Length: 123
Image (cartoon, rainbow, N blue to C red; front, side):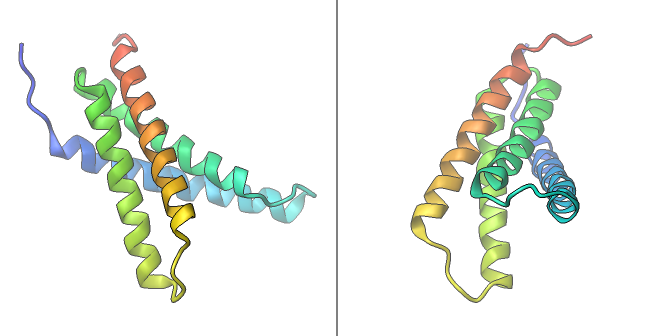
């Protein structure tokens, strides 16, 4: 049976990734405030990658096929959304190296999440 590519799953995945990133950022902010945990770029990358991974996993699992495509699309959509919002709300331009790092992280975590989402059995 052939299933067509569903744009609604990608948009839903981007929304899930955004909500997860906001919630994880809130939890991390509370941890920074009330503990002696140091702030680092690694923790921001973990929040970024984990939210995309979970969203891609969920979308690909729901689709049941083409997990890599769904994961890459969600990763790319999320990074584009972050870049657009960054351009709107911050006056300084981000470094190209940071943009490249975040793009690679988004594509890898989205791709892996999408592949694993298809392989995970449905109950």
